[in-house]
Image 1: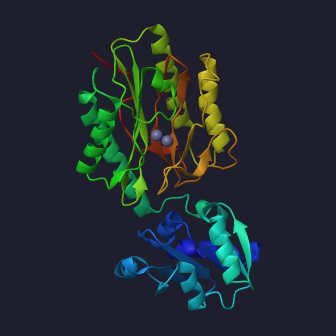
Image 2 (image 1 turned 90 degrees about the vertical axis):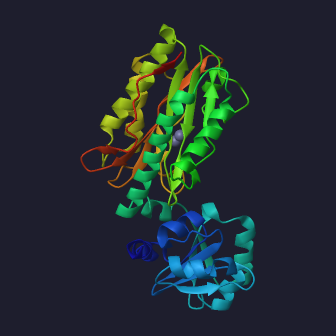
Image 3 (image 1 turned 60 degrees about the horizontal axis):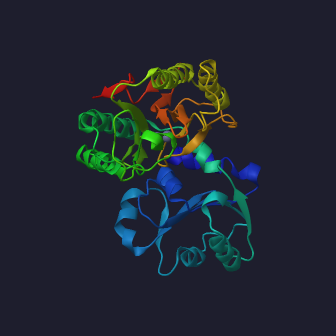
Length: 356
Ligand code: ZN
Ligand code: ZN
């Protein structure tokens, strides 16, 4: 992605740096297409140096174009020193959120002449808008999730366990062409549905319960992330009201999403909608998050976010209500932000499915 490397280089003047060291696997994949599990890159004004180990000797040459490639004989940092890539550099930026204290200590010991600058979210902001090819991968990941949900619904019934459903999700996803789960499927029924992130357990599904099912898949590295909530039996008026409130908040937020809108404002659209129906503290998390190679990426879509939606962002919209000891509802969709509004990537029914 040379345009993205150029965008990184554009930051050199304001950061007063002459090299950017990248160690996060997510960013190595965004910037260079590298899919291995060990590597680093240094972006210099006129050169890119990419280092990995012998396991990826052939793969790196296939995936990473336009870089000088080194295969580490010992550690990646040893090879970095041996490559003399930083020979002319004075000030080098690194990703604070992805560099351990141990790595930082090694770097400062091996390169005592250099000044290292901790940076945050520089690359994440550059990669927060999807390229056309990346968007296609996200679309496919979302299509797989939708297909899996349609196959899954007839299998949900009382008596089976949350783990049974989680296993079915993973199996169906792979069969449908996914690389694997984007994250451990969340299947939370009954009182557990009030846990916003209740991983599947041995608990068996019973009549009179909500079941929150939150799952996603990876396709060519890119993730989908959707949630649907079903009811076992017939909900009472209170349960129906809970569901309808979340559904309305989801709809209003999807309708409001467009480039130029502040993410905090979008969060506010859902929060206000829920408040009008008498729910406030029951909505205890952010409206959503950016969705890319990482399930949670930029932009942040919450009340305290300072991000502004840009065309090309992919975000989730996932209002939820959680009533301790009673139950919870969440409805999550993935949308691609455009200048005019948004493209829905998860066109699945949202009407409450009641399973008898
Ligand atoms: Zn989710
Ligand atoms: Zn999510």
